[in-house]
Length: 171
Image 1 (cartoon, rainbow, N blue to C red):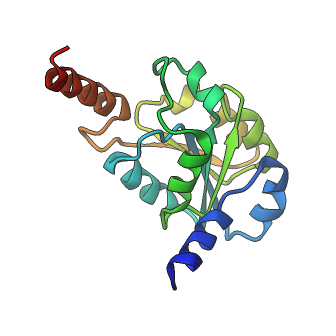
Image 2 (image 1 turned 90 degrees about the vertical axis):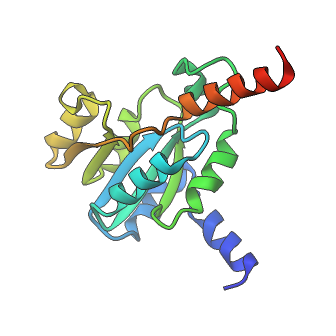
């Protein structure tokens, strides 16, 4: 495989919401679904996505659009990477089968549309409190939280970079 082939394979994993149903039909089941901003990819993200993928036949990652990410109140300048760039980075991972976006505050509408077999979230979620969990359970799916990889957080990473930048510039 040359560099051009890798680029084509990666970009082929990125899918609009309108094409999602037909693209999902060709993926192996069970379908695992996860979502997030995935702004600055780090070890915690990569481990989490690999663990999610190992739970099923394929993994769909739904990214918050830039507007949706800004509504999460992660900071006025977040996301640092735009939605198209974040999609390419996530699509480049071997664990990812398909990448799409959602503009709503939660992926509930998208989950209702595609009916994944398994929903995976990060360890900070109480799955019993999520409307997404109730939706999956209503049609026989299951929802679970995977533990965080200790010491990895995009917010903490961005804060550390900003502190180090202030020290180096004397501000």
